[in-house]
Image 1 (tube, rainbow, N blue to C red):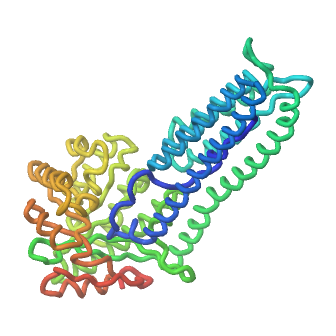
Image 2: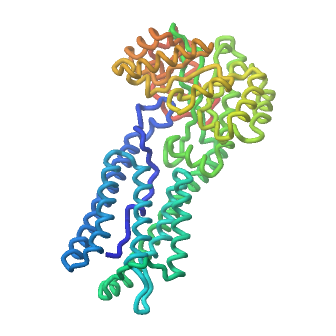
Image 3: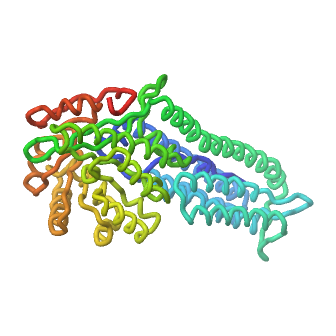
Length: 483
C-alpha cells in the first residue's frame, strides 16, 4: 500500500568504471582492494534493497488483488517492476543510472498514487507525499557526489510537488480513494516511515559533509607540520637511462600512517584546498629542480608535476608560478606541468591562453591520461601541449588485447604527426615494454623501471648504469621532500 522506497536512502561515492590496473602514482594503488570491497558491498546492498522493495510491493499487489481492489493491485505492481529494473541495473554496475531510475520512478509513483488513491478523506490528509522531501534530500546527496542538472531537476520536482500536494486537494476526476480501513493505517505508518528515513538522510548528509572537512583539517595540519612530501617515479628512455621523474604527493600521518591520495585529494578538492596543496607541491618540485640544476650529473633531468583543474584555473596561478620560477632561478624547460581534461571546465579559450602564456616562459605541458576522455583529439588543435601520456589502462593489456594495442599505435602515430612526445605510463612487464618500443614509444614510466621513491633513493638510482629495472620498494618518505 502506502510505502517508501529505501533505495534512494543510500548515497555512496563509487564509480561505474572499472578501477583499472594499479596506478604507479598512488592515486589508486593504495587501498585498491579496499575500494573494490566497498563497491562490491554497495552493490550487494543495492541488490538486496531492490529485491526487498519489489518483494514488499508484490505482497501488497497480491493482497489488494485478493481483496478485490484490482486497480490498487495494478498500481502496486509499478514499484515491483521498478525494483526489478533497479536490481538489473545494479547487477550490471550501472550505479549512476540506477540512482536516477530509482528516484524518478519513486517520484512518479508518489505523484500518481496521491492523485489517484491517497486523497484527503474523512478529515484525514494524504500522507504518501511526505516522502518527497526525503527524496529531495537524497537527490542533494547524489548531487554532492556527482553534480548534474538531472539531480537538480529531481530535487526541484520533489520540493515543488510536495508543496502542491500538501496545500491543495488535487485528485483525478476518476480517483478511487483507498478504503478507509487501509487509509487509517497509512495515516500512522507513512509519517513514521518518512520521519525514520529523514533522520537517516540527515545522518548521511552529516557524514557526507563532515568527513571531507575532517580530512581537510588534518591535511592543513600536515602542511604546517611537514607531514607531506614528494615521491619521485623515474621516467626512462629506450636505453634505460633516467631522463626525469614525475613528482607524486605523499602524506605520512603521525598516527594513521600513510594516507592514500585517493582519500585526501578528493577531500581537498571538495573543500577548496587543492590550490594550497598544489602550491606546496610546486614549491617542493622547484626546490628539487634547483638542487638538480646545481649538480652536473642531474642538471639534465626534467620533473613532471600534476596540476589540478581547480589549481590551474585560479586567477593568480600564472603569477604564483612565475614568482616561484624567479625565486628558485631554475631553467623553466626542466619543468613539465601535467593536466587532465578536467582543466577545461573553465573553457577552452581561457585555458589555451593561460597555457600559451606559460609556454612562452619555457614551461611545457603534458596531457595526462590521454585517450580516456571524450574530446582529447579536439583539444590538441588548440592546447599547446608537447607531450601525451598514454594511459596505463591501455598499456596494461597491449600484449594481449588487439584493440588496446591498436589504440596505442594510433596515439603514437597522432603524436608523431603533431610533433609531440609520448610517455607510456604503467609499464610493468618486459612484454609491454617490447610492444611499446616496437610502436615507436621512446619514454616510459612504471614499476618495471621503479616505483615512486623518496628523493634520496631517486638520486641514487640516477647514478646506476641503467634503470631497467630498478624496482625499489616505496617506503614512507622523509618529512621534507628535498631530503
